[in-house]
Image (cartoon, rainbow, N blue to C red; front, side, top):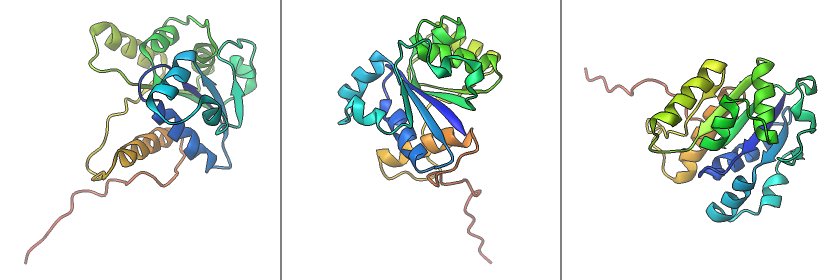
Length: 192
């Protein structure tokens, strides 16, 4: 499987970093990474990571300015794409096919080739313009997967929440890193 990962300037770049870490454990996946300038800024602001160290997690790295990169064409044969986190600016670019950078162009190609595009918007609260864009992206075929934490799995740390969320994103591509505590139904205590 060949998967494109876009990291944009929304808060929550740790989700994208963790996704890349998990993909490294899956030898059957070739990861292609594009980080926007805003994404690089948030890596520095929100984490102890350096952008070059994040890029080193991917198999292939593309510049967001390189509109001639392999992933800008449907003939490249990527299997899907995740934009994690997805800024509202990037969401707007995707919905309006305003492909002035590689992340939006690769997303546009993913949609036109009828491949899976997963958007992980990290914005709250949202105004009606945001929700309209999310609706439009969904009608175009994108999967909207906000990083809403699950609590049925009794997370004990922020890492537990991040791992579960990213694991659920990978589920959308049929990939399992073993980080998702699967729902087994309610625990029942039957007394005789």
